[in-house]
Image (cartoon, rainbow, N blue to C red; front, side, top):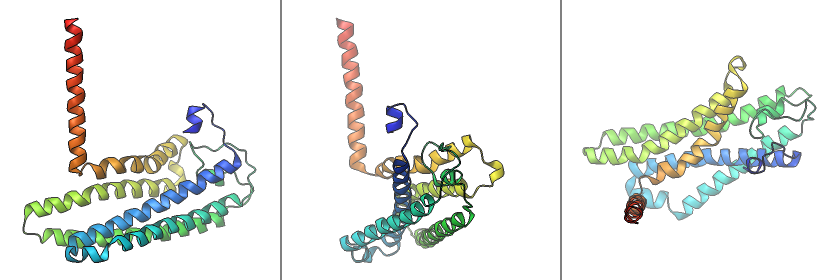
Length: 241
């Protein structure tokens, strides 16, 4: 954002390291929170009578702390591993932000082992969360399909589908970005995929999750109605003048 405002593409070495750290930190924490949200929906639909005890304020605080802590440790590991390499293949990162695969391309040492270690850690974390999400939704869909009321089924699905949409977009684009074959890689494709997994899911989160909030819908509708009314009144006044 700063580079766009000041019309520059330069970034310091320390700034690049900080950018990598915070990017990996927030991506890791985001994925952990998406996993926690799957658990929240599982308890709400499959064990509604135990929701208050299983997902109370203390449990929420502990899960949030675990998500932030996991993201922090994950970020420290990747940042330290990446920037401990000597970089001698120029200083131009072929991406709109400091992305680890692009930084590794600038290394003059054999980064294969470090890439494998980083990939194994990433896949382990992602696979564990993904399996937990899939297992949660299998239980959720089984419980929903047993509901006798269509209204109850609709309410349950409307609660889960926004979360599933964000999870699907987040995971599919991230997997494609980091595991796609080199033969189909190109700067333009890398740019599009990076935007999809780094910008779109966080940007859609408030919109997708808040659209179910009746109070917010009421406020938005009231604001739109007021804007239209003011525009009509302004037009009428201008015409009379």
